[in-house]
Image 1: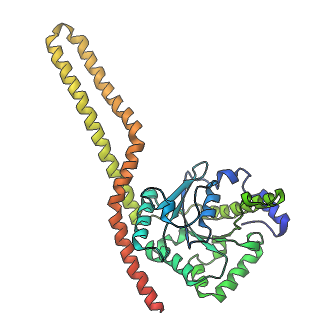
Image 2: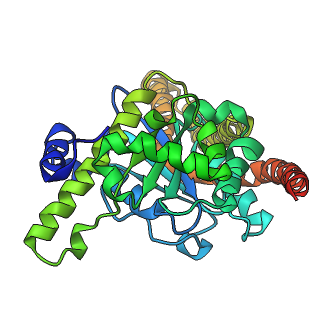
Image 3: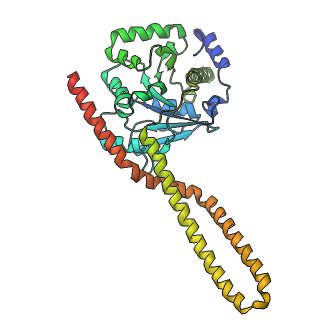
Length: 357
């Protein structure tokens, strides 16, 4: 993706891609109602900046800390303007400095937010000397946590890419040079399949709000548009590939549905009980008022119809609240599964590190 070299290429890339409205609406998904995208990578790689670019707002605060996440959730979530794209920013996936229970919470909440699976796993890599830390982060998620079945959904974004963001012809030679010089980098490229350059976007971390003057601001806007064009080409390349759905995501959806149906049944039982009490009272009065029996029976039938309408109305009104409660209850159900997965992964990861040493 992207344009040619130089400022002319920069303008061409901007014109050839998303419209200017993309800067405020984020990236739009081609031919799909909604995609779920998960960003992950080492702290400081530019995940939050990229996630904000994708959704078109400053929805994600910088930094990988649980203090930046509200409530009990450990996954940050935001939508683009037309809600065709949901972006998840996980805390602790592959970060060896964070304790396993943090990863458990991230896995649990990712499963609850994406029960239907994740369309794109977007690994964020800063253009600098690649160390084993970046390789371990990618391996932890794609090999240990989710497994090789997620690789068709794996893409990479190189941030702070400099000239590679606009000079497309220099990308493949640069990738080959890095792979030849770095075993960890070569290993990461292997995860992207036989033609990795088609699965990598190169972007500059450009913020118009930090521009010093109007010329600088215009240049910054162009760079942002070019980044959106490059990432949109990844989306177009991905079209037709089904979401990656780990078993824990499927189980999370089932558990939430069970909890929601339980609350629906409880609501219906409560309303039926209240209405039956009213009907019993009315029937008692009807026995004493035989002369008005015909008209009163008509009223009874009307009340039974109102009962059904009242139930449907209250269910619609309370559905959102119940869904949130169902998610909270399912969170408790799914956490032991997440704990079990992470413990198994920790054993596998320790074994791999021992073998390397």
